[in-house]
Image (cartoon, rainbow, N blue to C red):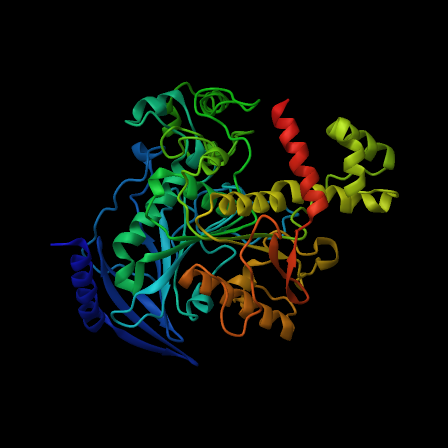
Length: 524
């Protein structure tokens, strides 16, 4: 029997489950309904609030513990009783955020058994709504599926099914080592967190119809490290056919990347980093490392949490795969914020500043000074932060839009978020890294900031663009300012600032300079 027919039969069976397992609870002004649906591995119950059903803490792979530490994600163990979807699953173990972090929200609980996802849906029986799958940021070292996006309900109310995903991070997610490579039938190691992210998309393809979602309309979306993930999913042959549109917010892997077994472009190989990690942990084998408590692993210093060009999940560098036009070519919506860097590593005098930039930019120093002018010590902070944020984030997103447009098959839409939210440190941080997340999720209840009427209008507008894009591959819709697709001549982008307006040639003098400098550095 065809798989689609089987999925529809399973969906019909889930409706019976709803009738058999539903229980109505009334608490204050909220009405919550426990429901149940059948997915591949068993029954899962959810909570209904304001017309949206949430199913939290659903396992999409077996616990990656014991002998499964540092293996690709394995199939879920089926369950027989109805599993509660009332609580999110544990986050991957991680060190606390630095004290000066913009977000110090704790990721609790934590456990090495962390491969869980969450679903929000308002779909009626038989519907097939577009699906948006969210990957959180945190440098692949911190965060969780619900850390900066605690609920997908407001976005879901606009007509999509929302999924948020946990994955392995830090040394649990990105340790490469010759012994691990030898264990692999693909002769690859180091991308376990990335493989988790791919496995979550496989789960969506198998199960999302049970929640009223359409497996042929899946949009992947992420911010920061989650956006790195989106660029890698577009490059990976293992993700082919698992998604149909992509949204990247402040992060793309379009520069040099480490290779598995060889040093490359001055970057140590993944296996070399892994061998140094094992030695620093005080053991001499992967078996011994698997026996160590997770807290010990987290406190081994100087581990490089980074993806690996392993010849399997990532056969070549992302930039090469895009340049060769062999990537998973889908429509994209990508962008960044105006103040991506909040670095506090600032020279305190003009002399110290000049020494730093002249050492870094060498023969390019005259051109650097033209686009990042510093005349007094009060100019230093802005220049240092601008160049750091633009080099790491703004340039990467423009590069992504250019590569997609040059391929000539799928549309790209570029944005720039310059609005300064009412954050307690707004005067210092501006439109900071992660500032757009509450707005695109249409969820200003995440923070106890003093939001004004315009904040709510902006959140409604941004989330509408995002949902339209998930629905059609084009963010435009009735009543919204026209957003032109990117082209290489006019370079249009949408600015979300104190007004929402279409502009051209994003940060052109600065980004053109950084492009030339990075290209020259790569050649030398």
